[in-house]
Image 1 (spheres, rainbow, N blue to C red):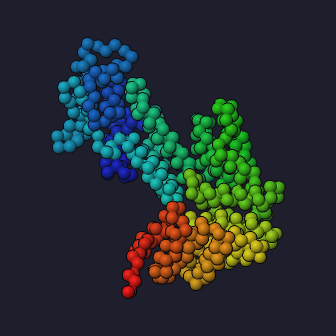
Image 2: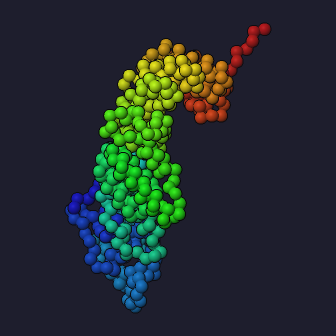
Image 3: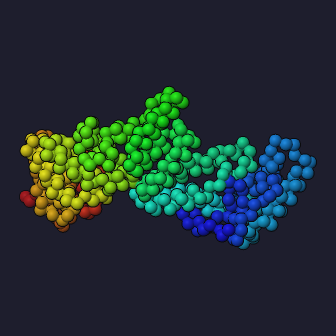
Length: 465
């Protein structure tokens, strides 16, 4: 077997020691399995404590675990060390892979030479890719990590005193499989995701996050009935074993599934039964997930169904369901802010804004005019954006909504900055800070000022005498 090159955060070293299963030495052209039990146990112990000195007494306790060591035990250890040195490639200028001093030995291992190092680095790379909503890149890292796992770490050769390391690696493997499920969902490989999640929930039915993953995989695969049946299995496991009901994330998914309508029905945008309120809550919950643990899956869900939602907005307007129309608009706006695209977006938002105005729904009009201003800014129509933001500011001012006014001012400033009006943008940002000195919006305003190179509190010009 060719040595695996370590490429994810391991400094370029190649995997040499395989401990995620039977302890093996991965040489340049073949994998060597040390057949004798005692040298293999010795190597496992040295690798558990890589680069640290291990006393001969501890080595004897491990190699002869549960048995009385012979009088010649210490001399035998020296023989096993000699055998291992012959099997291992040299390291460094002196070529000494295993070093010795009085009554102790240590093995020298570079970063990335342990497959457990590689597992951890690939998991970190997969996490980073998932956070960046790059499920395809995450999948590549996590499948590589999963391929390293071959069974119980260290093959059961280490004693109870070293079990914390074995437990740590087993937990890392759980994390790899859980993130792999997320990446499979994010890349629409639903059959593989379902199979993996079913395995995870069977192994540990009390690990609730994996029931959530399984429901999401079924839902996104269009298997609503299977998802609802799985919820009941999860609930039974949690109630029977722990005496507790499912947590809020699992319950929210169940409510979403109950409110939703199977995609094969032709009028999915206006479901019967639960009604438009439940339908809109479902979409708002999905929008909230765009910034959470299942962001990739939520983004995929919106990408495949956004035409349904724009149709739903038009149908809600036709039925005078104005509040639900603008709430659904805010959900699609969150999707666009997360990098999504909705064709014909600005004209649709303009329709919603007009409807809120006609219905005298001041808060809905404020929200939708702000959203419309952002849409115009994105398309370079700064003049139209100014008009929408100005209208939103007037509404916020009349109703004394300082939070909304500050938010709209920041968006107006960004529109002005995009048109090159730096001084005007800075003034709007300073106004927002006076309204909201300690909010999240204030942090965004300060960051925008810094990007413009403008001070928060410009020095006043001296008054002429």
